[in-house]
Length: 398
Image (cartoon, rainbow, N blue to C red; front, side):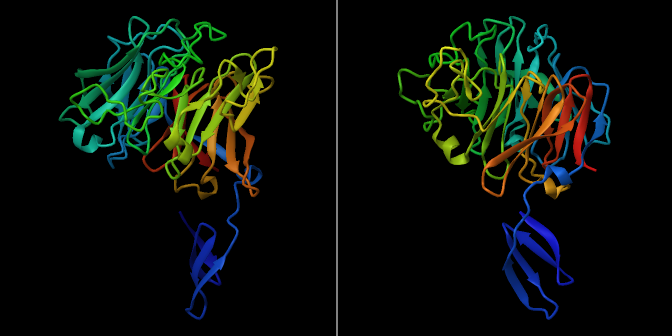
């Protein structure tokens, strides 16, 4: 990533702490500089309203096809498309006839475009069906690039849900072009169905599957961590999750950020470095641990579990974490490398960044006043905050 600077009266560039510039005598100069880390005290964050009048919006994404279009997802089962933030959205797909959205955590919950979408026209959605179960399906666009075919549905995966909550709902293609599917523990409370540490169910897990062959629903990647392990389902990449509602990959580093909604007291954010993502086989600890704490008063051994990089208490902060993205846009270089996340209940926005000492820092940086159901990212890396009450806002620096 390059940064334009002024050096001895002439333009220069910074990349990774090095300056490459031409001095007043026309001589190339390369010198070490310290690229400042994010300082929330000097950054005035704000929101720019870009869409209004939506019904229970839960996500925004892009197709990755160079068009710059934005896709807006409504929980009842509709997806809209807009050419840009200055355009009126039009209906892209309506599957309200098959989506069950009666529960607060049920409905059309996630969407991801195939890495080859520009050629194949395939995209994937995660929704609750009329029977209350999780369905991951593939659809295809029509000859009109702004209209999908509701009859093109091909079911990839169906997972029975024993309760109406903890459905998770996110879908994401990783840098490996695999489809990552997060599933909650089955709902109710206290991991009632004992799925968090049960590797024989897809519930409470992060799945990694290959959907590149349109002739089959999916295949299991040969390098999945538990392939040929009779004690763990082949699709599983990690277990021990309660409700990974939103997760994302850093577009630059490939690091994997998973925000897992807590229960009694703590919300957690997990940062899985890219090299660990490649290995997999993690256990995030639910229901033995919640955040960095034993879930019960009986105590526990936390040594076998992957610890979150951040947590926050419900006291004074909120009740349900909404994971976001690492900012990799060009409009606000002072935000580069900062991971943003929020709380659904309070609307508080947090920033996570790497400090000068190499450790992650976390600070509450903005009170949005919104019911933050999700974040979104456009093709340029700019970030959006989704207000469940019907609006979408772009995150800006004022």
